[in-house]
Image (tube, rainbow, N blue to C red; front, side, top):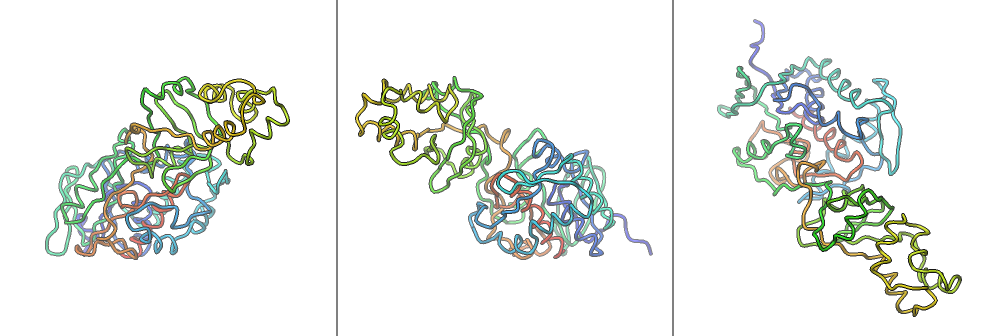
Length: 393
């Protein structure tokens, strides 16, 4: 008898990176797989990533570059499906790529190539796609799952939550994964925006005039520290260094910025000895954009360096190396690239991504409380967690 068209071995909710990876792996293992998504096209978040070129992984992937209530949870999946494994897949599909700064890998061409590759892999596994098919209800009984989507009902003994987090709602992102997880008794770590620009209060209005100015800095929040560029915006702070520390930032915490990364000790005192008639503004302007140098100098001792005491110059050095900003918020999920928090890892197997108390239920990708640094780390978690679940279902 032909297979019942409504019955599958696994139903995957979400046609993003993690969901497509999971589906392709399971499908190629002979599983009958259905992927459901309310969006009319697969991989929408992939398509806009990396400026349209998809920063698809990072050669420096390591567990300590991920945030989670359990910092050890990601180790298993990341060690079993490595960055090189995904690179090998990309190479097999003839997709040209290049390395940018800090181990980031991008397509030479378009992010569409990555989506096409994943869809080809799904096709090779006979995966069925139900796109433009909103999920209306999910039920669990008799060891199986029943999903009402669009005008259809599909069933399977395995269900994979791969619907991501609420970041970038304009692409249709929601907190659906968390609502569904709670229905099945799974805990959710409070989700908050990550890799997101931070906003500054009116008291920092001087820096609003610097909108568009960027400079290499070291940005810190707590014990986290990132040496990359910071960008001033009309609302506050952005740029890679700020996006990185935003994942660690909580309301009420200061952000510290070193505007003179790599400067030698007593560099202002040395400048005073060599060029006593130089002003602090000129000294800063040697390494910083003019507008930023002016804004910082306006808040520091004026006049020629030769007229300043060594003590005053040491104090100026300390301020420049540890300039404190007190953000009053972030630009929220609308501008966040990913989400910190999500489905709690203590209810999942790190080997298979299966829920400990609900056999057959899995959660992968951004839906889970594992969040990577900027630079391809979150995609690698999507591939690795999707692969782990795809091997298990």
